[in-house]
Amino acid sequence: MMRAAVFAIAASAALPAWADCAVAEALISRYGISFSGFTQPLPRVSAPAEAPDRSLLAVVLPNRNGHVADGYNHQAWINQEQQRAWILRTGGFAGVYEWYGPVALPSVDFSGCAAEPGRLPQPAGAGRQG
Image (tube, rainbow, N blue to C red; front, side, top):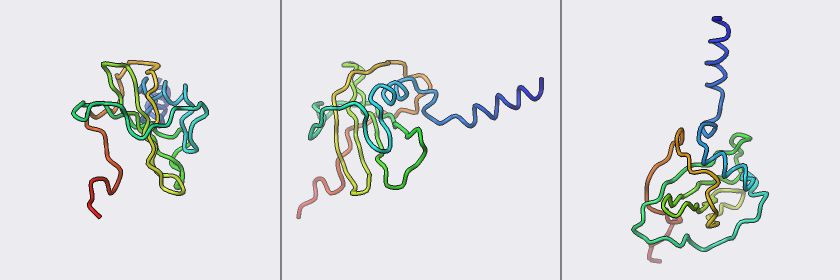
């Protein structure tokens, strides 16, 4: 009995942070989001079509394969009212800052998600006068 409890605790500690976030898992699975990009084509946009004062929910989409130094990182910026997400891709070998979407939310279950409300981020250097 004690071994089973210890195993259960160890197994839950070994799960990645997104394992309990249904929205992140659904987006990762549906669009094949990983350190190398997407397995499903997503529409590329210059910026999300959201009102500048709109608060969106930011959910990190971690890589299932762990951290890859020159791989992409992804975040979903979610409009809960419209049930859609914008995917922000950053990093990579050449250092990109790219937006994709909107994509339909395959799940609207946010329980277990480490999500932060906020405004859309701007690329480094945005707003600087040159």
